Amino acid sequence: MSSLDELLKARPTKQVWREVCLLLAELDDEGLAAVAPRVLAWPAQQRPMPDDWWAQWRAGDVRPYHSLAGVRHLGHLDASEREYERGEEEEEEAEEETGLDEASFPYGATAVAVPSGLSWVALGAAAEWHHSGGDIVRWDTVEKDRLTWFLNGAHYHDEPHDMQVGPDGRIVVTSVEGRLYAWSAEAGEKLWTLPVSSGSSDRDDDEEDGEEDDFEDEDDFEDDFEDDDEDEDEVSLGMDDPVRIGFSGDGCRVAAGTCESGRVAVLEAETGCSVLTVPAEEEAFGPVALDTSGRLLAHTSPKGRVVVREVDGGTVLATAPTRLSHVHALALSPDGTAVFAVGVAADDAAPAAQVVSLGPSPTVGELIRPTEFPVKISTHSVLAGFGTRAVWTERGPYAFVPTGNGSVLFDATARTLWADPNRQIVSFTPDGRALVTVNKTIEAWFLAGLTVPEPPGAIG
Image (cartoon, rainbow, N blue to C red):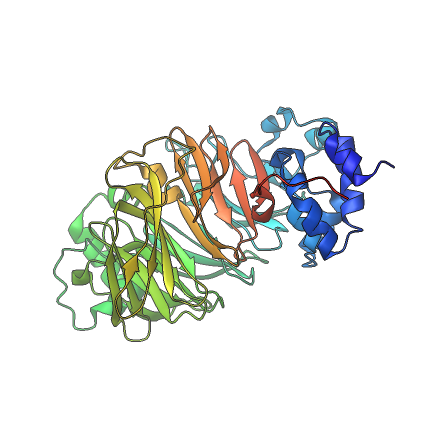
C-alpha cells in the first residue's frame, strides 16, 4: 500500500480514496489534524463516506476521521431516476427496487427531514394538482425496501413546505391544508393534528381566550375559516401561507409560525397542547426557532425585524432590526445569547445573513454575504421563503438558501461551502453535522467535510 503522502499527491479516484480511508482510520487525533487540510482540499463529491464509516455513523459512533468525508449517496426519489449516472458501485442499486417505489414523486419533493443518525429520511412529495396531494413518507436508508406512510396524497390536496424531526428522532411535524400534523417517526402513527391559523394577522380577535382558540378549538377555527373565505382550498394551501416549524434542542417543544397570516405558537411536542400563542396584534410571523430548553422563542416581525421572547408568558426580551428585507430562516445559539437570521439583503436582493447578539441592548452584526454565489432572490420568492434553512452548530451557524438560479450553503464567515446550479430541497440534521439535499438524488453532505482550510505543507 502506498503511503498517505503519496496517495494524496495522486489524482483523486475511487480506488485512491478507498486506500486513503483505510489509512485515515489508523491515525490518532494529532495525525488527523496534520493531514486534514490536504484531504479536505479534494472536492467533497470525491470523498464519499465508505460503508464501514457509514455503519459507525448510523450507530451513533461518530469518530474523528468521519469529519474528512464529504458526501454519502442515499438514494433516488423514484425508479426512473436510478438510471441517473452514478458509477460502478451503484449499478446494483439501479436495478434494485426500494420502498420509495411505493410512493409517488412525479414532480419531485417539496420537504425533507432527517434524524442525526441519517438512518431514515422523511419526504414530502410535490402535489399533482389536478389529481392529488403529495405523499408524505419515511424511507429507511439502511433497509431500503422499508417505507412508513405518514399521509397518502390521495387523502388531501396540498403539499408540505417545511418538515422537521425532533432531536431524538421520535417525532416528525409538518403542515398541510392549514393544519399541523405530528407523527411517530417509527410507527407512522398520527400523534396529533391542529389547525395552524384562524385568520389573517390584522383581523379583530374578540375572544377573551383567543390564544387557545387559534390553535386548539377546531370548531371555532372552522367557523372563522368559512367566514373569512368560502374557497377552502384558496386559503389553506401551504404555498399561500407557508408554515415554518422548529423544535427545541431538548425535543420537548415545537414552534410553528405562518409567514403570511401572522400566527406564531409553541406547543408540547408529544401532545400538541398549547404553551404559547402570540396575539395577532403583535405581528408575529414565521420563520421560528427555539433554544435548547424551549424557554426562548425567536420569530420575525415586519420590515426584517427579529423578535425574541420568553415562551412561558410571552414577554418580549428583544426586538432587533436587521438589514434584511425578508427573513426566511432563524437559528438560536445553543446558549440562547444570539440569533442567526438568514434572508434577502435589503439593498440588492442577494442571499445574506446577520447575527443578532442578545442582551440588555441587542446588537446586529455585519451583513454576511456568500460572495461566490452572485444571484438575486425575488422579493416574493416562494422557494426562498419556504426553502431557506439555518442551523447553529458547535462550529457556529450555517445557512442554506435556494433560488431559481441555484442553491448555496454558507457559514457565518461568508464562505461558500457548497453550491449547486439546481433547485434543492434540504434539511440539516438536528445535531448540525450534516445537510441532506433532495433533487433527482438524495445525498448527505457532511458539514465538517465541506470546510476547505488554508493550503498546508507536506506530510512528514
